[in-house]
Amino acid sequence: MEEEAASGVRMRELTSGEREELIEALKQKWDQVNMAYQKTTFKNISTSNSTIGEIRWKENCEKQLAQIEKDIARLSVKAPIFVVDDEDAAAMGMSASGAGGVTAGRSGRL
Image (cartoon, rainbow, N blue to C red; front, side):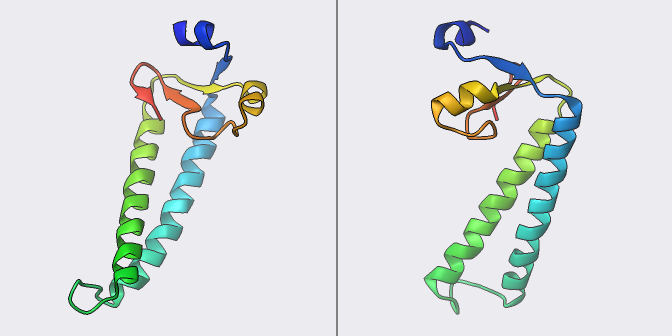
């Protein structure tokens, strides 16, 4: 917690209920992105018969799915997860679930 003392940011541990809610929300988001991705790949997008926009959209879906899977894996670890306290997040101009606001034990940022 040396970072906490140096930056003046208060952190709290994510409860198991909050963790389960986040995992469930991420799974729902994965289902939505995957459904859109499957509809697109059903058209058999390839570099020879698709526009640049279609190819980029497919690649973006793949990146989103990979990131969501990575986030679910990090949240599923038994190590404690710390988040920036809501009051501090508001003062810093970001939401509590904003990027960089969550750390997973000693394994790094989420």
